[in-house]
Image (tube, rainbow, N blue to C red; front, side, top):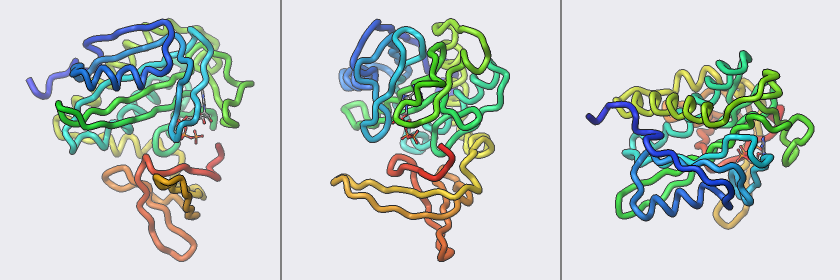
Length: 255
Ligand code: ATP
């Protein structure tokens, strides 16, 4: 049935070491892999975030995984939001802390990043494919590492508990599956995601990087998000700029 659950994580593959699970799943997608396929790794030698920044992790300690979605176009825009929401809820439930989302999709606790999400899309013979990468700091000791200057923290540090990564991954995939089913059935995660956004009301600088690498910036207050998750930034001239995820980097946001 179209709206049934259990699409995400019906097949979970595991590898000890790889360059990036993003590249592996993109390859599997172009070979026709089904929606919901997940590849997790103990270690990535070239884990990456947005704009080719690196994702750092201690071998064998964290959740590093990519998930293949084959969404209808109308649903694709909510994938980053539903992932952020699923991770934020997982961290909150498992660690008994309050988590928040830095727009568009970093999951943070008290200003420290506990997870990053990366989305890469392609059009292939089977239509649109979206590969979603999840880097979740589980058992690594992150507090002193500050990768790329970002304050980071792990679930272990938040809760004084070490976690079974496989159990955690299955829990997370179940949450993603539930939210994805809701969105496919015509629901939306925007209000729940919006409620967790720590960025609203803050002074932000938004940098747009064009394909050629040239950057443009606007500064203002992050006023709201619209129905498609774009951040509405009001500049000092009172002009409102809708900013889509994927094009931008936020600064002056406490990170
Ligand atoms: P930022 O989080 O710096 O605002 P971003 O949302 O574009 O930017 P991501 O694409 O999610 O960032 O991830 C890449 C960045 O995350 C790196 O540049 C580094 O600053 C930081 N980072 C790398 N590894 C980790 C980690 N294990 N935990 C937390 N942050 C990390």
